[in-house]
Length: 463
Picture 1 (tube, rainbow, N blue to C red):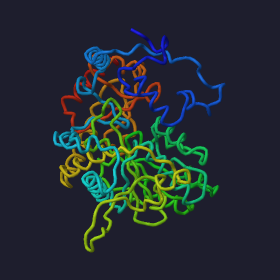
Picture 2 (tube, rainbow, N blue to C red):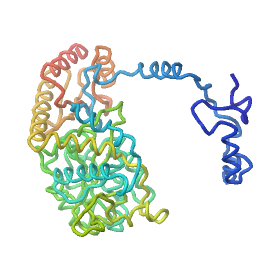
Picture 3 (spheres, helix red, strand yellow):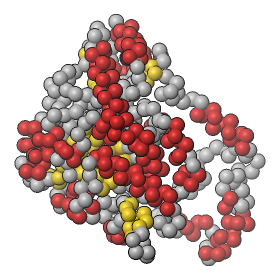
């Protein structure tokens, strides 16, 4: 077998058609390049590698490659193979079979981009998704999904910064560490992020501390999550909106859309911009990769003008009285403005939007209410049942929780040790949030027996 290191000019990679020497040479001649090195002439010599990447030789047959990939994938253990109580942003929910049936249709699965005149079905499907999300969120405008909820939060905060012309972002509720890191990365260098610690006794927003932080008058947005990273639905959310608006800031709220069959939407709590992840709406966990983010606002020009991502709507056609589906206010996007765009937007997670649209259509208002009530009831039972385990505390007892909740280990074992013990017994335990604390989660896929098994196993480990 000839390796690329031995003969870089004659080697043909089995997976890359353009590696065929004759094809590569024809392409170089067509554009007038002497060699592939011409493409890298602008890269400073000091940061170039000057050697081939240290990669294994490619497997040359499909059978070998299939066996290799199956071996790698076989090392994973999914949440369908073990009893899982993991949440914190990627949740185990039942995905109706019809969702997979629709999103795996070739006309959706393979449609990367397109324009209204050539891709009517995909554009209409996304318009239907946006319409149902708008109804769920009680707003008029929802974007085509971006990469994930973390990016949606970062973009929503950048939108607030552009509208207000201010620099600081204030986080008022408990926030997931990974999410906070992503937000900080996404809004810099234009914005600074200040996290106001929550009340340690209640886990809820500290209104006095938020008021003090707003006194400087430089805040672009107050950000809150519902439920928070602690799983708490904070009663102070409407008051945070008042404080933000009194200070001339916008109020941005992240939310789990699956709660909205039983809880008030962000718009009803005073939010100017809502954002979040649609993963709970019929998207598989995909080992942590099944995410897509939404942004939602009122149909207000100053808000809509700051969306960097695509918006689909009904647009008139050349035939009077007929309408089609297409981009709305296309001129504000980076697709139209290129380097002058407010914010670059790359590949959308549009396929996930179609999946979420199918899920919402299947569930309907009554289904969303029933699943929300089920999760609230199971969360309450899990918190009450685990609190009975010696050596385990479940703090923030008076607060309403949805899906996620905190477990505090007081029996001498650390949260990481308990998680390891659970894994050895076929249970995925909580995500450690401190030495003695972890975030656990239940959804509609869990049963009372599942929760009782978790409690009994914790008692066995902790004692």
